[in-house]
Each structure stands twice: as structure tokens, then as C-alpha cells.
Image 1: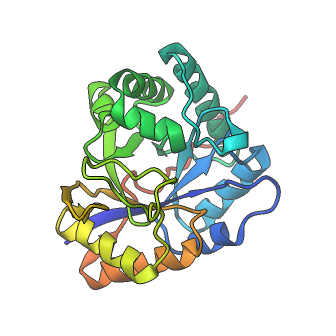
Image 2: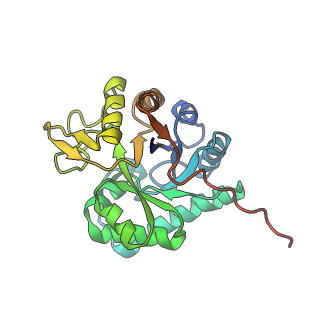
Length: 263
């Protein structure tokens, strides 16, 4: 039986949990939690970690460029040292919150422009992977299937998870279509579910120009801010399970930290 992880980007609110986040928890196996720069807050991280723990959802960090105004989706010129520092700060922020709730962060998935830039730029990919390895060499690094980010993780001796996107369109080179391109975001539940099954069972996806692109699908993303995200994720899970695919967190459920010892 094939096994695949189903993840979503969550915690991208400030004070009150989004309805989508709450509904997604009963469907997904892994959660990528905003670390406070493109979205979210310390309070949002804490509540989201609690939601994940209550639903046995694996906990991961979703770090980004420091660009809340553009939701972390604007490309930014940054040195390797700047990226290293930026990621380290966000990973430690989530680890601090999760540690207070006796939970360990199990995976890391960069957000938005940082993710897409690291997918094509070796230097940036190595900076991201290096920061993750220094944070915790035992975590799983999520990256676009076939990208520099996956190769960067391998060079850093990290365990990696090749990611595909059920609700996003692809270009012929295997990259995601820019959100400015018509049809880049897919919100038709039937189409999203069918694409997910194809990516897992056939290891291919149809690009916008009709080209069949080879992909390695170890984890599938449904964006938390896509319209009807919870319904899309539910339909994806139902379709995958009907096709004989088991949904399971690739990092395993984020393990609890050991209780504090005597002072």
C-alpha cells in the first residue's frame, strides 16, 4: 500500500483561529505552522500547536521572509547569512512555544517566496538546509519535488520529503505557476482530488501547457488560505484512500519532549 503525507499551511492568523484551520485538523496528517513573520503570532503558534496535538497532527515550522505586508510571497534579495539568521530565529520561536507544550517540531517547510527561490537556487537552498540542520538534524525538510531545496537537504544530511501541490498549477519545468498566472490556484474540489491521486499513483502531474511532468509525491499540500481549503483537503483524502493510499505523517506524530527533570 502506498503511504503519503497530507499537509497544510496553518496558523496564519493573529488572534482568533481561522475556521479552515480548525476544520483542517481532522483531515491532514502534518501542519506547517506560520512562525510570526509572514503571518501568525506567538499566541497563534501556541493555539495551533495545541490543536495539532489534540488531533494527532505532526507539527512543523513554516518560516518565511520578514514580509508580512506581502504575506511572504514577494521575492527578496538576501545573503546566505541573512537567510540562516532569519530561519534560525523563526525555528527557535516555534520550538520555544512547542517546548512549553511538551511537543517537538518534526519538520520544516519554508513559505512562499523563500520556498520558491530555494527550489531553484542552490546557494539559497544550502543556506536553508544549513539552518535547519543546525536547529535539529533530526527534522524532515519539505521541498518542491525535484528541486534544489531537496538536493540541499540531502547535501546537509537531512531527511527530506518531496512535496507536490494539489491546489496549484505547474509549469512544464516542474515549478509552480506564479500566482499572477490565470489558473495558478485550483479550487475545484473534483479536479484537486483527481490531481492528487494522479501525482501519488502515477507520479505525474499535468502542467498548464498540457505537458506531463514527473513528480515524486511524498507529501501533498493543500494551502490553508485556498478558498474551501478544508473541503479540498477532505476530498483529497477521500480520493486517495479510495485509491488505496494510506495517509500518514512523514515525520511521524511530533514526539513529546521528555518531562523536565528535578531542579
